Image (tube, rainbow, N blue to C red; front, side, top):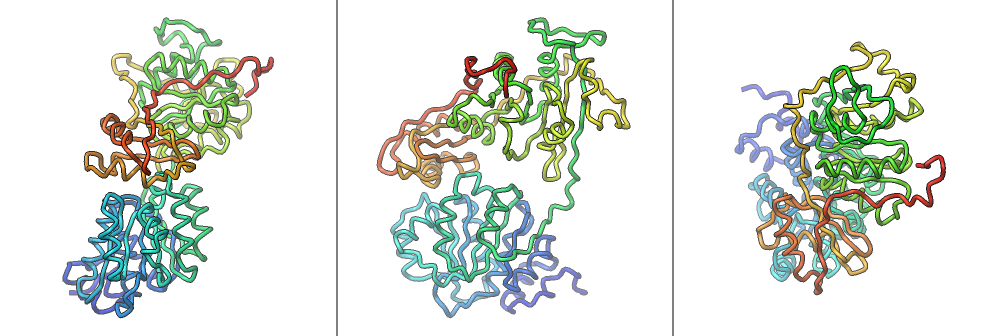
Length: 493
């Protein structure tokens, strides 16, 4: 039988690996393996964008196994994973790939397991260590894990580790690894934080993206005419011949399209606060972000929106500067911006990483001249009237996560691994139920799946780091109102 052009046999791998691959039925490489493996076996650093299930474990697994010296009974490869479940899966796959390499030892070091047996296993030596950041760091600080012989470092699902708050732990781990090493970074997304991490720990990495088959970025724009002035009325009825109030129109669009996450832009901070309060009264989960929030309040709002426990963020352009929010489904211009470039910047926050996004802009007759070029040059009618059948409008989507706030942080020696370990140790909560973990100096936030919030509260109310912390669930609602004494006549942003 003729070998396929993307056959593993075409790689210069040790016979123990190629023979085992054949026995396992591996013949053709997946796209990530075909692009990454030739570079990895050359010993080059790589930064790979690939989703779960793409075959990335085989890619980095074969690469590090090919360069391993089994005669040297020391840790030569370190693989860092965000969760115990992923670490177990990676270790199992490595053992499967290395079945014909005699005396190879793969050791898993994760939280939730006793430290003593792990120390004993390390004393007997290992070639490859797979673990979670918190437990790896604990062994490094106890000097029970020696990394001076490590030649390969793999950060698997790096974006997930950053989401879970492990950035500092990863930095401390990497400091313990020899600089003369191969570093492989795998991530499903390329946020700015991943770019910054790569720049700090890799040497001329080869960038590989196997998500090219995704649909190109596309923003579906709607321009919707509303009543000439905002009217605060409880009468939500509107017909084809009458223009609705902005709030009524926004309510209808949210219930019609039901985006999982929405960023709504207002031109003033007072409008941000009032709109958040109005949407909350209508059953939406909304928070406002404006210039009068204290830094702690701003962080609270951003954390809760980014971790999925709040579905609508209402902000001014000034307050929204620097936001890097992944997977934003929709952008609403409650008020049109005064400049075309601002409009482009606003709607550019959705439809990232190959996804499709929604942009809805409300305007009145006097503001028609401020409509962007995309409205004037559209192949569709310039102003798209979306007709709603009120019977088809559905309730807003509830957030999938709940934020828990812990009254302790870095100053109390509390780390993301401690929180994750406390939640998952008993088995009633899986790592998949845990979302982003943010640890500040004096308090920490963790996002938990809606149905597991009560259990998580009970688990976190026990001892962590030898002490008991107060934990509370945060109810979604409007942010504090901007101080009117600090608002001048122009109602600054």
